[in-house]
Length: 199
Image (cartoon, rainbow, N blue to C red; front, top):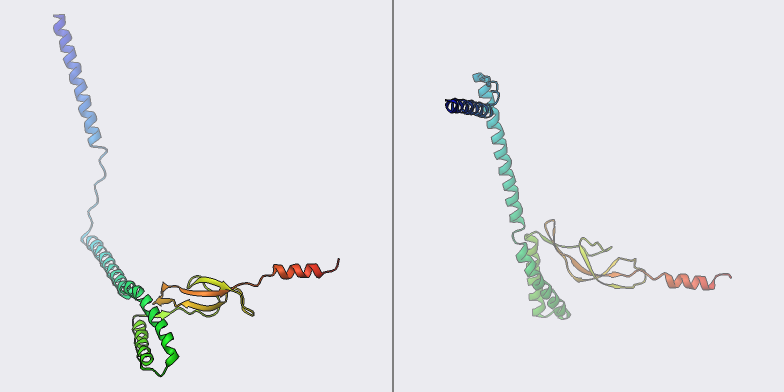
């Protein structure tokens, strides 16, 4: 009899524990209910969707403009690789023209000069122009391959162009290879002045 009572108490305790677990789960699954959203009036709903449509149209317009700009840039510089590969050919042709220049009356020189003019026109049509190689050395556009001393020349002044440089629109294709003036040594002059100075 006592065993039966004990079993009943255990069953009742299990049932109570199960009910508490179910209630806890319900509380976890259904946290405090949020206040229901107030329905928008038809005018407010229409304004909301109108603003969303305006934003979407503006985003699409910006995307189209960006794509058009990128396409334009790609087209401007699409031939840059080909032109870079052709530059050594232009250099060699220019050297040949300089050699033929010794006989300016010859047909070879006249023909080469005509081809040189066509090459220059082609480069110009592609947006290619020579890098200026006069005045002071600029590391953004020039590559110094040697230094030489020259009287009357300031340090860093460009003395001679070994190889022409080129720009494609506003982008550097190849830096000009130049020889620049070396700064005059002042140490030997200062040493001579010190030796001849008063003791």
